[in-house]
Length: 182
Image (tube, rainbow, N blue to C red; front, side, top):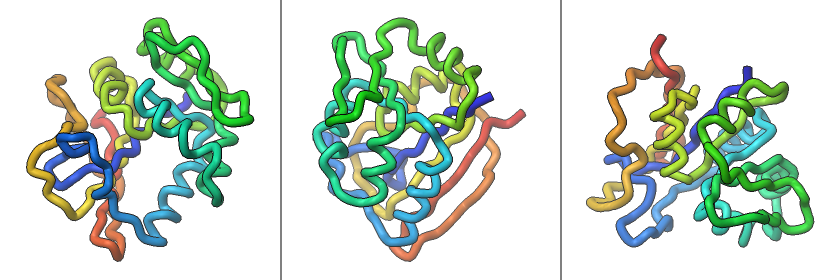
């Protein structure tokens, strides 16, 4: 069965974006870029919410580099109640999911293929977490305290996780990989 992996940049206090929606606090370094590319190579689909999709679709189809090239070739699923079409540059590999998201993701997990990853899309992460459909959380903790912002997790019930990996990068970022406790 395919896994659903969450990969999120977060501040030390667990915010995924500043109060005004800014993302300029993300830290990058060469090793972190390699880590991100390795994840992208291990999946065959990306899941986005509508807002994240619109932000990504306006940039990635025209961006240079290996990460952009891999992103562009992957299947994309867009959770939306408003979009009927989800163009992605010249690629025809993004489709809207407008029905019951949890049911659709549960169905996709049963299909053959590689794992799927969610970038951004906090509301999607929260909804799929509530339905027990997230298999792995990769939290990329940036060395910043935002003070205020949008938390990754909402008011869902407690979920116990097991740490699978902790990796520190030269930039001060720490990647924490958690799976659900059994």
